[in-house]
Length: 165
Image (cartoon, rainbow, N blue to C red; front, top):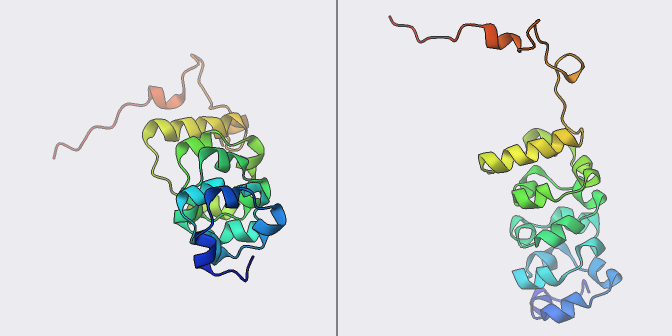
């Protein structure tokens, strides 16, 4: 497969690409994969791609993956994605990830990950990460301290007012 030109690969029909075996898919170069059109990429069985092939996918190729394909990514494939690659996935892709997939996201990607989610999508993702135990409340024992009436201490602090000067 690697001997075929990118033009020859680009001329494969969706059906032909969908019928490639795991061995044949792994024989594709990153250049060949990145030249495929959206419908051609949608025909691929992403589980059969190597981690090196997934890591080499450009933003256009990753953005072309369907939600079903994003869900099918293995933990090994997810672990090699960069923060730039993660930014091509949408909130639906993240909300449908399994706990194992979320745990596979590399710490480097965590630190520099920036997504353009709306407030509700971001809250939904944060809730899922918290529920799965992947993010935690860093206060004492994970529970905010309260005073005698059960209210958090900041509720009893006077609200700051802008300086009138």
